[in-house]
Structures are given as structure tokens and as C-alpha cells.
Length: 314
Image 1: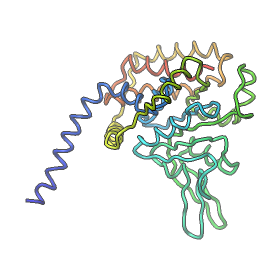
Image 2: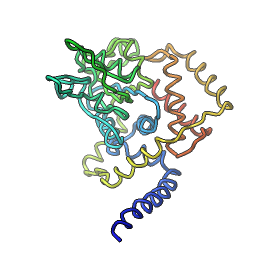
Image 3: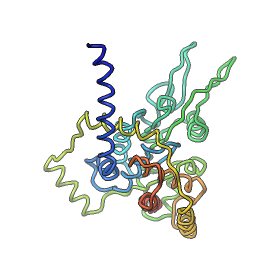
Image 4: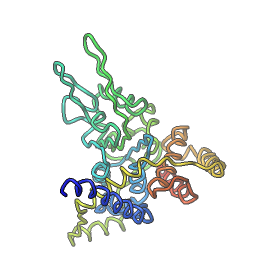
């Protein structure tokens, strides 16, 4: 009897879970973005982008730029908690392996990138990255592995990841003008262009600061239950198997949108490159996948366009 139950129970659980997932999918977009760092007020489009990143089948790299204390770390940490496979740590690394790998004798020690293979590498203060890790980051973001050279051999370790990173400006605090901000970016164009989306997060204005103050005074902290986190992890894992189709009817809409923002490129921190277009398509597909759909709909385009426009705003 016990043997029979052990076989039946997983089938019942799977069927029940599938029904729950189906119901949840109708509100997934609105709910999940609110679960990303719920104690950080505002930054709605940033939270939506981070939530969608969890559903991207191909890598989708996001960089959050801003002064210290604007909530970047909370956003990155929250995403790492929901990702079925993830790592979280400082750009400087918390071990000898750093972002890549290290070896002692025949033993391999994995850093943040290979630890997150097949998932999300959440890296706080990437501007603290050691010089030796720059090549590892380039390789993981572009090729899906990190390398380690030692006498007598060359080691490759799988690091197929989406990178979600934060960075602080050169000089501690960003200036107010676009040209001065560009000079304070902590990375060269070669690294910046490897990110599909880059959000510039400004300190809160007076109104939002007032809301934050009230929240602190009232001690209104949102605490997410462990069972909710596990449910979301299972949901993301289940959605990951969905292959999303991008209908031809939307191709012109995307092309016109990209041409329009390309004409305004002088207003932005980054170049409007093919990588940004790839990121847009991956966002669109992630939106459909988040709702367990195999076909892209107009609302997926609308969401992705809004998020991309927000990522370009300075």
C-alpha cells in the first residue's frame, strides 16, 4: 500500500500543481513584479524587467546603475531568491574563485558565474570586479563558459547564465548632466554593450522620499513566505520548458519602434545596437512564457517596449 501511495501522490501533486499554475498565469505579470523587492517603493518598470529576466530562455543581461542606497542591491538579491538556479555575491568575489574558477591541486572551486550555470548570476557592485575576472565575465556573457589556464592544461567550466548586476558610479555619486554621467560610467563600452538592458536609477524625488519615510516610521515591512518563494521557483522552472513563437505580423512593429529610438540615440547613455534588439525580443518572449503561452501577443510587445524605453531614460 505504501509503495502504491508513493507512486500515486506525485501524480496527484503534479496534476494539482498544473491547475494552480494555469490559474496563476492569468495574473503572473502583475503579481511577480510586485514580489521583487516589495519594500522598495517605485521602480516598477525595473522590477518588471527583473521579473521577466527570470523567464528568458536565452541569456538576458541587465545592469542597474545608480548611487549607493537607491535599492539596487535589494532588487538583485530578490531576483536571486526566486530564480530556480542562482548565485549572489559581490563583484569583488567572496572567495579565491571570484567570478570564475580557481584550482588547488586537482580540486576545482567555482565562482559566481559557474555556480549559476543554467540560471541567474546576481552580482552586486560589479564595479568592484577584479581585473582577472573581466575576461571571465566577457566569456560567460557571450560564450557560456569561463576558462582557467594552468601549467599543463586549459580548463573550461560551463557558465551559461543571465547576469543581473549593479554598479556604482566613478566618484561615488552620479552628476546631473548626460555628458558628465557618461564620464562616470564604471565600465568601458565593450562591457556596457554586453548588457541587453541598462537602467539608470536616480535617488527618490521629494514625493517618493516622503512615502519611504512614512513606510519606515510605520515599520511596514512586507515579508514573503517561504512557501510562496518555492511556488514561484517551481512556476518559473515549469515555464522554462515553453518554446515561444514570435509571429511575423509583429515584425514591422518592432522594426519601427527600434528605428524610432535609434533616431534619438544622442539622448541615451548607450548605443542602440543589435544586442539591444535581441534583448527586446527576449523580453517579449519572456512575457509570453511568464503567462505559459506559446505565442506572442500584442500585450507582450507593449510591455517590452515600455520597459525598454524606461531603460534608456536618464
